[in-house]
Length: 582
Image (cartoon, rainbow, N blue to C red; front, top):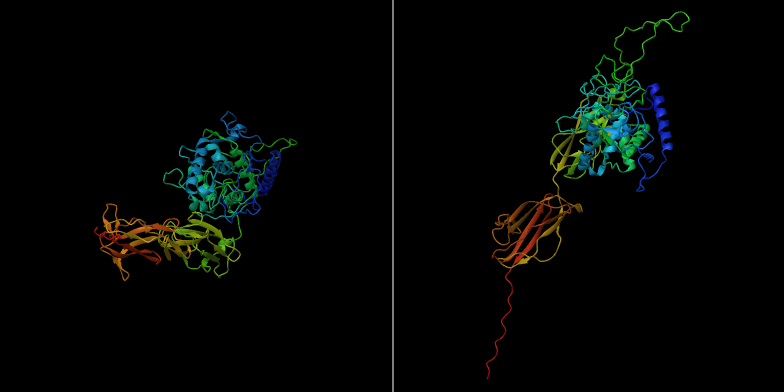
């Protein structure tokens, strides 16, 4: 969960301030230092000043747990200690299934995005702050939480205002959204960030394997390298737009880096303090008309208020309680809120997007620009626009994602991240929609063309000659370029042609051999390597002598003609015979 500071409940603001002071105090009590290799530790590193939150967050800026890690370093070996709700060595223990999910997510990201350098301890730190490690490991064997973990409804009453985006599918609320699951994703983010971490064919935000993998991919967006402090700051802030949250997660990250151990599911330590001064996220979904999550109504995880005292005798210090003005059980009315910028959006317009074309494997040089407008055509700022690559294609946005959410600027324009072409040739559709508002989407067409070359040259200048029936000593190698740059992965053909004016394959002269050793005079399916080089197979000659032509062509129109000579070896003239002796 993630707090939105400046828009929280009055008590929440005070609690957050106290948490920030506590973080500062903890920083002072644990002296800064470096590790054995001289690297500044994550906890002692100052968040980079240029790091800033994006206009959206994974959690919708819901509340989070503010408990700080103990001053004492964790005990890396299992030991007995207090049970759930206690403190001490169990603080370092992570429930077995939850810990397994974090480590599996790290392994998956190491393969999919090795440059991200995601540590599982970062997922553990966020999981601790968001849900207390799935409420102390209250999960089934497959990783699904025993009870749904929901944040308060984001109705603008002390929190962000996020109207329903999933028809209550994830959070049970068809009016407003709530953060869901052990990693606290809001439904609109889960819709594109969700992953299937336990290979059961479903993407469930209430499953720790799915949620941990999704969190890993979310943090690794935009080609981030989390071993770099600036990128690490940006990643955490993208999860939650709060410097206090950043400092807190960094503290838990360093705490878990110093050591942790596995504890049985259901025995993890439960946190006790939240940024909104509440008692914890609601454990069960709600529906419109019922008491929203985050209210003061007691739940299984909330302390029940004491019973009102009975009326006492005069002078006894007690008074007869006044009857409630509203009959018990009466549904509370939804709060009255002013229209948000999103509410005023009537349609999307293209904002001057140029023609989108790129060769396979290349980045598109132009980007998609979309403007949000009112019915009168006035630009609307601070509206989240979601760009989704639809259809069967391997084209992605930079960073490998197929969905990106961008807030409109003061001119009402949202600019999508650059597109990265895959290897699939053809048309690609990118759809722009408004998050939290049902208006027609706007489709953009992009085209991925075949890799091409405009120039071919030989890498050597040795004459290519051979005796009849022999084998050419040198193989033909060429280099392909496009606009002066290396042209890698370009399709090519090589044909021994009949003549300069006749590009059909010759029926005599030099030839290649196929896998069965048979004569072939035309090769297809060739491709240049990563350096733009193409080395042809060995050439052989039949008994025909003369000069022959080998033509190499590529996609994009590059062509090169190479001369081959087949000639009999020269023989020296016989020496003059000796004159007869006298």
